[in-house]
Length: 566
Image (cartoon, rainbow, N blue to C red; front, side, top):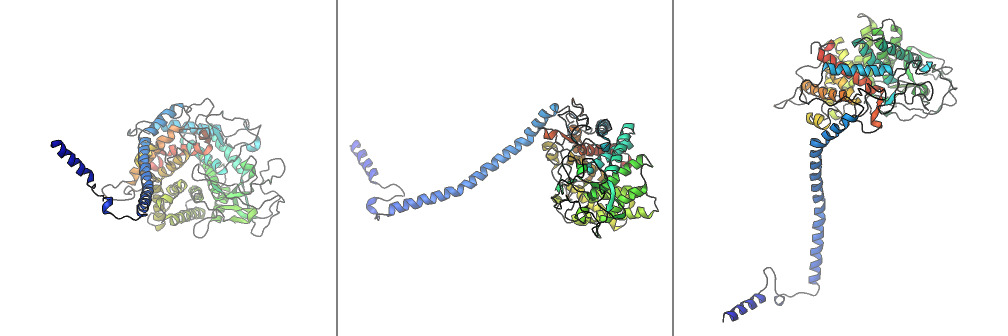
């Protein structure tokens, strides 16, 4: 009986419809309904799956990015630096712990400055290194992994030589000589200024009425001028790069038989294919920045060796700068006689700072009651006021890291009336430029991710130029300036700058080759740590800007000069 009862129960269960379903007997279905329903359900599912794919993919990529970012910040960066540094031509060596108050010492700075100065003086060409016409040029580019070239008498001349960087190298040598006088450094300065005057300083042709004999080979097409990312402050000019060489020899009289009329009391620093070297045949061009830096270089020599130059020849360069200034304080940045004179097709926002610094240097040489002194101060002030107005409403991310303007500001402010509006407009402009420089990355990223590199890409020169500007700014920065915002997490701008300067200097100090089997002691590579032959490039401005920055840092630690009361 029990077995019969269980059998009946199982039979009943088989006949009962499943939950959520209907029996075929109780449902009327048209012939096409089943197939259509299945198709609709399949299509809907595929649409839902398609919508999920991007979401799932994005979620997966986000997770992967978080994982990689965490790993790279906490492990990979340290592994790369620790593994690479000991094997890079005995470069500066490992940095002290980031929390160490003695991260930057006077001895460490002094060794770096001496080595870099020796390198620049060593690559200033003597008659045993180069032909007479090129005596005083620098070895513009060398490599840490190649022997330093010592003979330029035979073989080709250097290519892409840059006059602005030549003048910058003289500027740093003059700073170094004032710090520690040396016969070798003095001779290098004199050679390099002599070459500058002979090769580049020429009068300015008056082409307002086209007083010109056109060269039959002259090409009137201008190439675009490219900004050089090496130091954020120098633009390369390859305009009219066609063959216009006259004869086989080197003729440093740029305008021989070309022009019959010149603008009185004006001279400029001219570049052409002869100066650039190689196959370049760029036609004569005078840049605003070239005049400013030539003025700085030549005044540097006059300061350490009075009587080397006359005020008249320095004033002629300053007059050219004044001639290029517009009513609103802006400048025409290039003068091209073959293109009708003032060339407005290109604007550099770094040239005005270079020009302003040169003018302030000259104002310091003039007598206090001289009308020339007041003129140079006025032109320099207008230049910086124009930059202030131009950058006033710019987002910090778009403000150029204009270290030349900061250097000019540091020397100009003491010459201005501190109660005047001009003084405070110039001051506020400097504050904005400095704030921009230290806002591109966090404190953590500066040290833990980028090892002190201010641009985060391993380049040494942009870090050095920023250090020059920030250190100059510390000489006039008010103690109550705050970084960006106020509140419970407010940060002093001075403290933030000091943090960036300290770790930026540590990065640059590590980069120099202290010993080298290739004769490259004192060389600073373009990237640190170098991972390729291109990274090992040592250009003259890489060394120049780095030792200029370290000399300012040394003065700050010793409380010397403008840092005496800061």
